[in-house]
Length: 363
Image 1 (cartoon, rainbow, N blue to C red):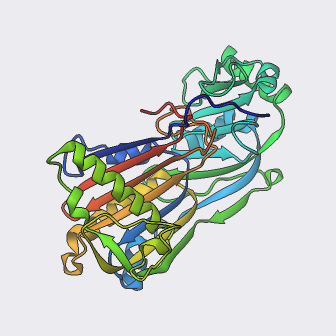
Image 2 (image 1 turned 90 degrees about the vertical axis):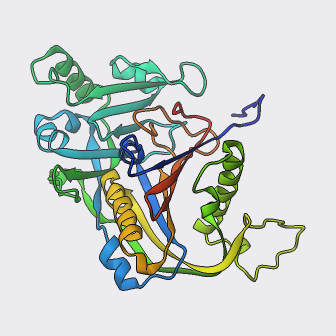
């Protein structure tokens, strides 16, 4: 199907400045309200001893890949043992949110069904038309699993149960993780054997250096004197962060690319240096990311002997997630971006970047 675009596609980049020492700091909220994360990296503008990295940042996590019917999510044992006993999140693996049904369970206990028109009409539950795409071709149904009235025998519960057992009966392949209250660590989920659950360990790579690179002086945007100029400089730094995250040759000190191909130069002033990356891949719990953020902040503040002024934390969300931050509806369209980055300084100051695609209601 061809798509006629009458206006240029508009992605969004929100930039904010704060400090973890302030009561109104939003860093925890930003991390915890973004439930579906698949990649994370941490960059230090220095080579760090691998043993120290392992001891400080080896936050192990695991999750499951499992075939589940939707009826399993409303079973009382699941709600009691997982939804109300910690943070459980799940996301179905599908062909894409623009063309297929996507099911998710967010960290607040809301089951989100982002459905095609045909599936929605067959399901028989009330929902709302999605905010993106062709009018009334996709619909969203939300079920609060923590709702007190969602118990067997109640009309609403029995209606949902009947629909899941009689209309939308197929199994979906999910990624699902659980962090039990008080532990801040990944916890086991007890699945029936017929669900074919596969336990997957998150990948952790710390043996990753990037040497002889041009590193801009990030102190140039640490404080705001002229907001307009600060935002221009911050955007240039964000471009450099993107190149650093893919370890691009364009920021290598010896790069001599033909100007016909690229005329990129890092923001000035810059200096030659080396960097260390820590990379995490998988279905990463938000609480794990929060622990990593705290570890980075503490490392920068307490280990002054390293003379490391700042670090960068990049987090990528699932492009086909039905929500981005705090239940804000999300779609794919051209790119499906819902990513964020922190520049964290050793005095607690931070700069936050939030990048979103066109199809996202977050603002």
